[in-house]
Every structure is written in C-alpha cells, then in structure tokens.
Image (cartoon, rainbow, N blue to C red; front, top):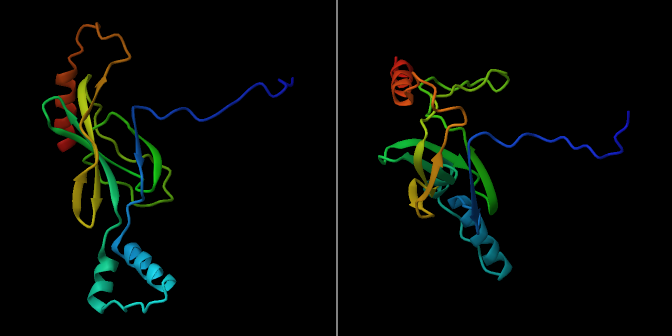
Length: 175
C-alpha cells in the first residue's frame, strides 16, 4: 500500500545529555591567523613578510583548537571531558552518560566494532562547563550549568544499590 507521503522516518535523537552551544567565530590556529593577516596586507598592497623556519615549525606542531565540555558530579570530581566542533555557529554534542573507558580505543577505522565505553553514571546532579583549548591554553567560555540525570527504570526495585554497582564496575574496569 502507499501512504501518500505522510510517513517520515529519521534517525533517533542521541542517547544521553545533549549540550548546545554557539560560537561567534571559529577557533583558529596560528597558521590560519597568519594567513588572514597576510591576506589583509596583500589587499592593502603591502609586502607580506616571510615567516622564519622556527615560526613555520611551530605552526606545523600546533594542535588544532578544540571546544571541550567538562562534566563533573555533585562532589566536583571530573566525570568526563567531551570535545565538540570548534567552528562558528550552533552545535549540539551528546554525552552518553558514561565514564571514560580504561580500554584503549580501536585504531582501525575499518573496524565495525563499537568503541569501548565505561560504566554508566548513577542518577544525581551534574554540572558542565564549556572551554576552548587554543595553542595549549584552556579558557572557560561559559559559566557552570547544572543538570540532573534521572533513572528511566523503576528505582524502587529492591537490591539495586547504584553506588555499589558503580563502585564494582569502576574496580573491574581498572583491572
């Protein structure tokens, strides 16, 4: 049968906490900033200075700028750091409500296996801060934002001490 185009299928939203942020400008490397300055000098008809070997070597070694969201629990301990796009505009990044894994990541890009994950966090209050990492220097971009992780299953089932389960999972993860 034909539904007449009334059906729509799309991907499910990401699981976990979704963080939305806006960057007025893209975060740029030293090389990108130098090229912008050179472009402006050319436009004005000036002579473009040639950078020295040391400056070019430093540009080659510079890490790309990054946006980092740091999630902390209610005691202030860092639970997870999540990276996001560093380009201009609105971005949405999801956290899977898990601690990082102690297992190394799968390096083979062709592998269909899932990346290793750590144990799930327990329900409670958490905070997130947004920072930028440019040329090895980290700077906060937002104030602390609070949110709460709540369980979806029936929390009244006897014998479920989530703190004990998490503690056991973290101990076995370290082994």
